[in-house]
Amino acid sequence: MREVSVLVRPGEDITATTWDLEYPVVLSLRHPVEAVLRRDLNAVRYLDGAGMYEVSP
Image (cartoon, rainbow, N blue to C red; front, side):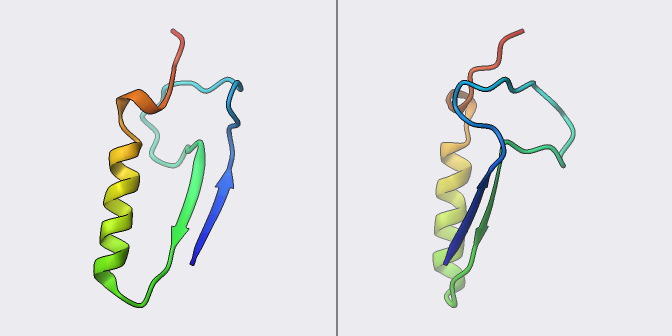
């Protein structure tokens, strides 16, 4: 099961931050097998890399 809440849509302004409680999206993952959760979380972390966002100075 998954739930996604998009807080910043493509084209909307987003600013760089070091505050860990400010997110452009919130994702909740649930699965009875921990290995599946870890695999999916690692995929999300990989996709959430430097190329994911265009941040203007």
